Image 1: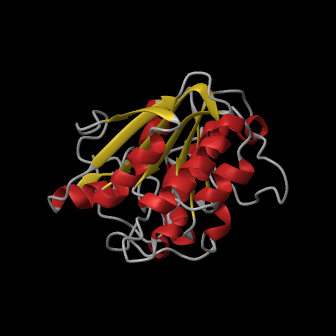
Image 2 (image 1 turned 135 degrees about the vertical axis):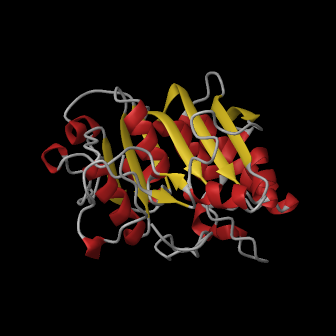
Image 3 (image 1 turned 30 degrees about the horizontal axis):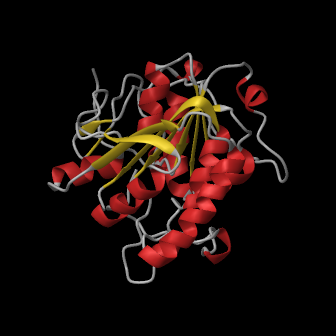
Length: 278
């Protein structure tokens, strides 16, 4: 079976059967014959209101959301393995979404859509309530510098919105290689979810679910993984109250929790975690 390194858009489509790699790890799936390609780009988001998920995919199916998807590695693999689920993946950087959509198109993944939007807007403004089966967030920007914690996406009010969009038995999955961010994530997540540390590598992708995880593992960096289901009976209204309480507590204990009004402009392009590329 043909293998070749990553392609740029200027090189034209790779041949049928190509398996691409990054950091020596194959990207899920292979390039199909052009007649089997599809369109995975969601190019127009609603200016007001929520995305009509059923209309977007042309069916009713459980939804998996990948926030800050990068080049789409996790969503590509999940969409290939779980055809009965629909997948919506988003990133703020157009360049990585271009790579992601190209690969999704060439793998014929009709159960996958990519869009350019920051994760906070996707979760707080564009996803309807109780519509998401799983929400994944791999290596969100930790903003580790002094005074930068306000720029983090995972904050109490963001997690309250995760509670809003998840099904009652839905799943929240988060991962980072920053120990301080992990400390703060656990404190916050335990207020909303039955949250557990997942120390082992993911069985579906032991070499890494994301580009960043692959890079971190190869550099010998620790990886912190967590999974959680919403606390039994928690409502969106209760989650908002908990977010407010946690925000006030966070300002005293310095866990990086701030109210939404104190956050930075979400349109700012975040710095990259690992070497740029597809």
